[in-house]
Length: 108
Image (cartoon, rainbow, N blue to C red):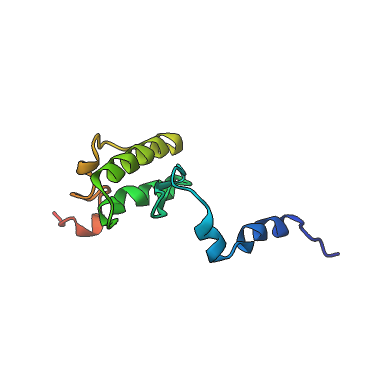
């Protein structure tokens, strides 16, 4: 006996927007992106928040004001998703690794 799940169709509805349609959506204040005007660094779950922290300094062509605003969005998303963030200023991001890479540690 075969069963079908009607939930499959609901996932496809987001795919119906063309890229031109998506460009027309005004999300300049959308908190689901660290840099909403550029649609850079989505903040929709803990994994994306960690990625936004790690790649913060790689975002090009943004002002210091946009970086400050993005930092506050990332900080709020980190709190919301339980991601620990020790930085208190956006200028602290990008200068050092945010997680330990054990492959790079020297053996004793």
